[in-house]
Figure 1 (tube, protein in one colour):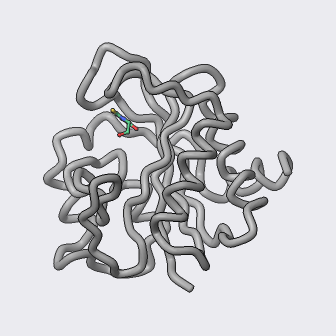
Figure 2 (cartoon, rainbow, N blue to C red):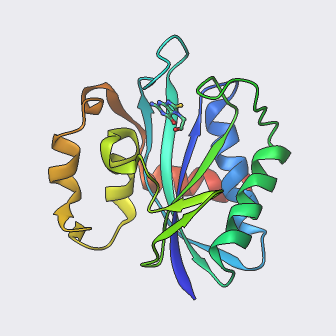
Figure 3 (tube, protein in one colour):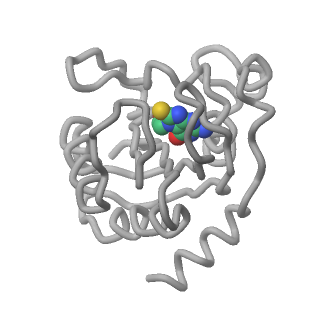
Length: 172
Ligand code: GSY
């Protein structure tokens, strides 16, 4: 069994409902169990900035499948939640990115772990800090890494992790 960390993001429609639907799908998927939820953060768009603000969060999964099977599960959940791949950096109902899979380093055509951009994005690192149980990651503290991210000012707590968990339990 390994711990995997997944970043979730949404900036179309009922953003929070899409995050909760993805989490519910994790809960119903046999080989993974949901073991940690960050708060939900509203974040200014990074990259292509002419789009609506995102809701972002990170969850921790205990997984009994390998990283490529987990990737397939993530893609299937994105498809079930109406994710369209028309514009690379454009708006999306749901985005599920594998940040970490145990301590593995993967460089494959379809999967790079740790996620290649995660250390430059406060919209990933701020929620990751809520659920990552260790002080440092790859030699630096998450707080230090966040301090050097240019998007850190655009992040506002939208829902605490406890409130997110209550909502998830109501919705299940
Ligand atoms: O990388 C995931 C999609 N995405 C995001 C996001 O999730 N949050 C913010 N704040 N900006 C983003 N730009 C892209 S692309």
